[in-house]
Image (cartoon, rainbow, N blue to C red; front, side, top):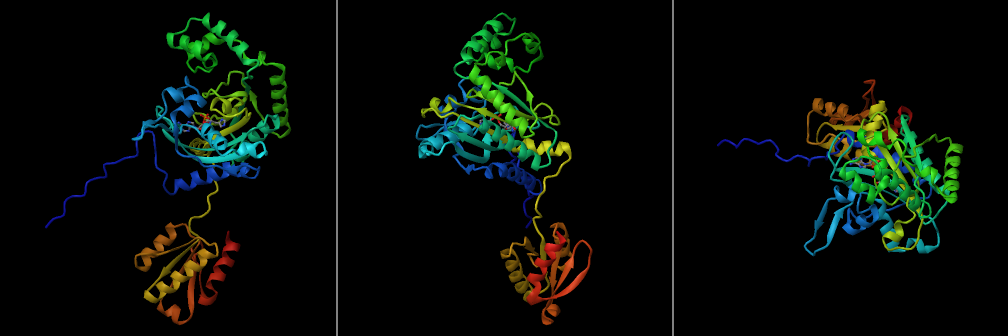
Length: 430
Ligand code: HAM
């Protein structure tokens, strides 16, 4: 009887997504950890929220007229009739969770939270722009203090720098507040209405004129030359606040560029807004961004809680590192690889591997009863520094062979001291 031909796998990762598998997955994990480390050291506690929320949370929070809400949300209606959306961003979710739990009532403001996870946007996929991507984010909820804005920006810069990233720039702007923005908005609308623009852009002038300033099309940009800028219309409080943020950044050795046209694609921003861009990435150059969102809590039914935060893109940070030729430091997946020859050695080395792992050594084992040659190939491929090899004769002599896979040097070590010996060598070899 012949077996039917095995057909090629017919499923692929959905468009705009990719799988993370070894060895590249280790790079992503290292980037996530490095970006989160500075906020963890600065009093931010870990938050995790569901991957989906009520559509209305994002519609109200991110803004009805934003691309994210009008075009990019993955929405669904449950069998129970709830309208849900896969989260396109983290700020609205994290603030919703903090309000729901009453964290702001504990009297210890700001509530500082960090998070890391998957986000979903139905965007046109291209390099650096995916439909499923990862962010590390941080939010400081319930305090209005320029030092808090500066803290978050500094912590993001420290995260990028700890990875060895150098070719990024910080763009900084202030979008004013409810005092000064309405008047500026009206002045901007007057200016824009006088321009020769297409119908869609004319509609945007009425709904969200600031977004027109951020238009990337050359024909629109060419007409915006003399557009009034928010920075010339900031009220005194906003101007002082912004000056203080700038001063604190300067004192911390964080260079920035004032970008009076930086608007960002989410409607909740007030005052400080910023973006980190990397010039080695092409069109999708933003590796992170954020700002202050003093009105968001009230927009989603909470009390007044002025807040600030950011989200850093993990996928794009990985691409930026590659563009700079910098490899994030990845701990070795395996440090010691055990190769048993025969049944008794198998049991003995298996115990030794367990002991090593419990002592914090990354150890692996040649499973599947392969011969010495194949097992040594696996040992080399695993990236391990040492192999522990033992056959019946070694065991009879009470030893295991410890082989340095870099130098090829091999020494017999007493079995009873093998764990200690490996740990000692490890300390000196790494
Ligand atoms: P955002 O600018 O929409 O802000 O996203 C932050 C970062 O996520 C971007 O700079 C980019 O690196 C990454 N990112 C966004 N979309 C994609 C995509 N389709 N593919 C790959 N990477 C992407 C926010 O999400 C706000 N919640 C940030 C914030 C927090 N503001 C205040 N607090």
